[in-house]
Image (cartoon, rainbow, N blue to C red):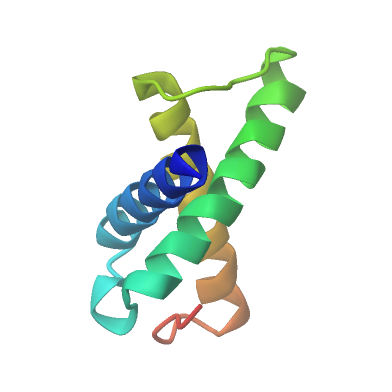
Amino acid sequence: MLDILLWILFGALAGWIASKIMKTDAQMGALANIVVGIIGAFIGGFVVRTLTGNDVSGFSITSLIVAILGAVILLAIVKAVKGGRSARV
């Protein structure tokens, strides 16, 4: 149970940082940050695995950076689909 809570917090942190980078934080709430961070971790992991062949796992600065990268990619896609308007995930 503690692991799930830690992953949610990790996703929230990654999503929040990505929303600050993409300037969408004002439109997003805590739940959206968590969802963006978790989905971003999957996207970032896929991108890193595809480009380098290495897996990223566990709680580390590297995995946080990968999750943030994936969340930024997700937010950029959402902004592009919505035509640059405020992204609400």
